[in-house]
Amino acid sequence: MENGSERLLHLTGVFLGKEIFAQSIHNDSARRNGAFVAVNCAALAENLLESELFGYVDGAFTGAVKGGHPGLFELAQGGTIFLDEISEISPNLQAKLLRVLQEREVRRVGSNYVIPVNIRVICATNRDLLQEVQEKRFRNDLYYRLNVLQLFIPPLRQRGEDCILLMEHAIQQQCLQLGREPVQLTPGACRRLLAYPWPGNVRELVNASERICVLEKGPEIGEEKLDDILRDHPLAHPDSLSQPDSSCDVQPDSPPSLQPERQRIEIALRLSGNNREKAAQMLGIS
Image (cartoon, rainbow, N blue to C red):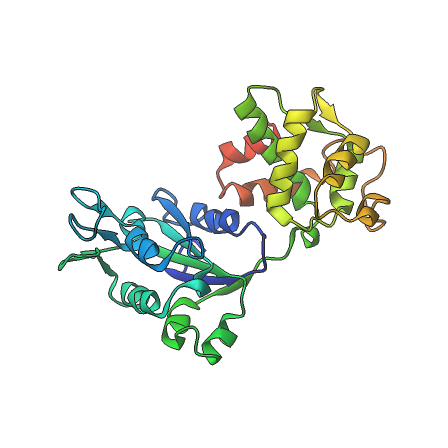
């Protein structure tokens, strides 16, 4: 997608690591050296979201910062802006977003001047946006402006060995923050990761990695301790922790690196945006 469209809409379910996925698209594009800016459109009221996206000038409203403030579209100049839950924005903001996409310019709240922007816009939603259009809750012209390429991110349980590499990477990052050596996954723990259905998807995996790094004092974590951590999750289903998935081709005597080396390298490169140094760090290769 290095030379792909400047507008990309990917439709996903809930809690699928959408921002991570969007950032990987950014990292693998010609805009990788620019900023990556993300905002959840459902988390802010309409007036706050407008000032966040478009910025404002001095005196635009009560409480405005003296001298004004640039919006996220400006801050993403030369890079990528990720608009999560795009279906939640109001009709008024939909019209303003459409103008940004058409004219490639923004106007701060309270200003009479436009500012050119050169950005890639990636959007995500957990709704059926075409149905939202048909029911008149989302502008059809904005939908077709955004929907140049539509992607579906499968849930973590359908992504095979990705969960192992993602967990290894998350543990490495968490342990780095805690100033300790990374906790290693035993072959049994890796089999359990593959068998677990991940109802909370990537967010649950990251949460589990944090708990591993805090609770596990030794150099590695095994199957039983990992079971305890996963079982404590409120969405965990007892059946998912009873027996490993028989479809897994991992054998009990497999080494910690369960995947063929070439496959692991390919996944690491994909997750790191083809940055070989970062991929090597994820794989523990010097």
